[in-house]
Image 1: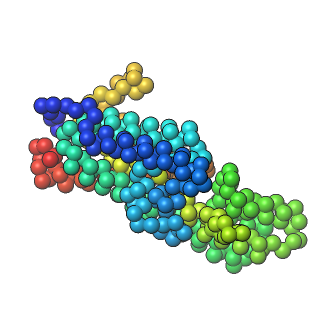
Image 2: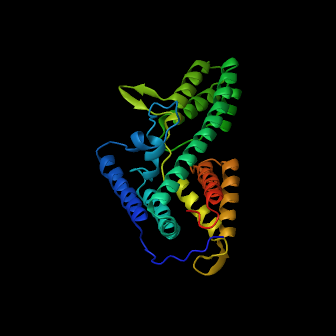
Image 3: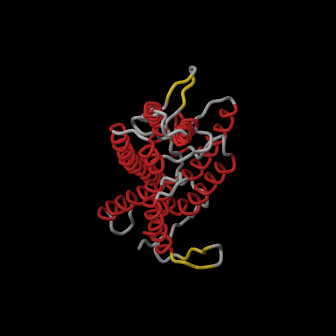
Length: 294
């Protein structure tokens, strides 16, 4: 356990302050550019490496985005929750470590979260691709329905997933119709995207992951690790030690990530990745300097 007794405590230290400003400005840019028909997440959000939109810099830039211009309320809530946690716990850590070490810790946790998340995404997509290959070997209405039920979520406003369900309805309404070719083509488009009338419609490989949550969960873990018996007040009323809050978050994220219920678009394994990287960094730093972690 670290003894934290700074000679001067800055309630809004430099790195935390600038991270909050940068994240807020990029959310503002998301809305402004969105009105002009530009989705900034296509360029800065983290994409699967087989995506039409993937660029290496997205491992860093995705940490500064927090949603879509289509969902104002969700984006603002996402930004506020992350920035509040960053200020609440990150300010203490930056005062303890100094700005340079804190920024390094924050960025490495975010990068680690992104790597783990993409690893999980790759595993999930591999399963979908294998199921697609099996389906192509025997495409019929029963197997098509099974594929949709297991691997496709009907998302509002996604024409490629809507197309799959339209084919299913037509095929079930007329079982004698041969829609196997149309179903194979539609699944392929659902995965990889397609161009129609010079407009690109993204597939699930093109879905972007955004947010500082991986880095923030690393900050949360570090606080619980260094100050395990500090009391945090649940709903500002119920006192709970930090180590129990961190453990509860980790268990919930693991459960939610494995369960992965329909409609859940939260990158739970990215959160766990941030916590895992935080643990590894703290162990390394503690080995080098057992007294102060800096």
